[in-house]
Image (cartoon, rainbow, N blue to C red; front, side):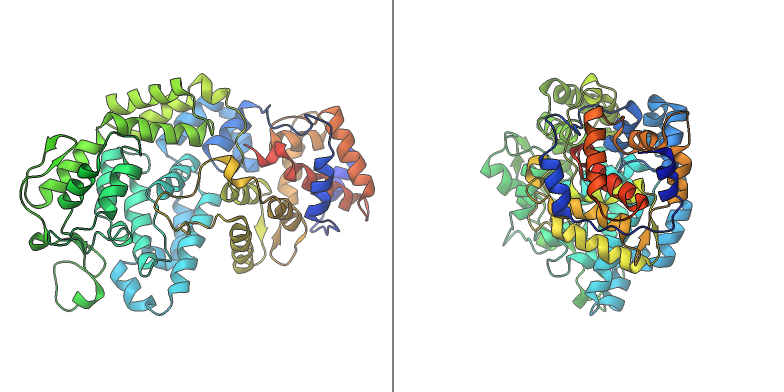
Length: 497
């Protein structure tokens, strides 16, 4: 790309592309072996893509200025100022700050409004938050403690779960998060514990608590442990709407322990005898599981998979699990062990999940919405096409965190950069901000932009592919340059992190 062409296009207010995802796929299928490899990436790009949802121009410059070590510590502290973001959520999506009782009362027949607020706030926070690592961990724990919002009343309850369970504990102690989830009305409803009694115990929550939330499927528990755990949590319930007029101590949709529904009497889980009465039974199970070595390993393996590799290196899993046990389940301490390890810095490429791709493109392009509602609908449609709408996985195990699961649906992934670079109905990239970023340093502006998007320069072979592709794109030099950017964003160099 010539310097004059670059500045011409990034001085434009808009650009149209006569381009299709099929064309991009055809070009990428024919590139020389090893071209557009995601294997090499500078440390700042590596950190911003692994610890967050990708760079923005301002964040990229900031992280380069303070260095990756300082940036990691800042993110672990979650000290970024999100006051303006929270004001935006309050103004645009007030549902997210309502009590469950108010949501039931006002939106009982407007379920779609609650779904839009919950998913919309998730997208907005991921795009705009200064605390990127915290938001990644919110995404991680929301998936770990998965709740399917299309199950009856789940969506009305999930608002409080997101606000009061997941977000406050995302970087805290695992035991606190586990207990918050165990008393979450959304979780108790989703896994049928709200109606579990000593006379008719329901094993769904007890089973997923052991298999998914703590020990893991190979964590050493038995079927009898599942039954005993289920008994321990009988009576852990919620106030349903029909009790609205009958109670004055708690509101509709809040946690309620029903003592008469609890199965008092001896119980043993993992060889440990429980108190045998009241909420103390469930609390004892939470304490036991939160400090168990199998839990330490299960959580550590999932975190290493998220931040390092689809095939978690055993040595790092062991080190993270040891930190988990020594720190009493301190999530920040476990993350620090992972993020400062050689395995993290030498991690193999990991295919971006669709949510990461969508948010990363909006952040990376410094996208300016002309119509927020249209942008929201457009991104929701893209996530739907790629099968990764937040809170929409029906099973308790959550969306797979393995790139191999997401690799069979590439056309929507290639369409997305085309749409964002050319669709003027919903908005456009902030070309002025990208041009300013590209002018930093003494090198070629297009090369600077490649460092920003993919963490390195294009090789000679890749430059040739881009030039040949641009020559075939109809339109003026501006259209050809934007098409070249779309090609790079559709390539493995960007589609992996």
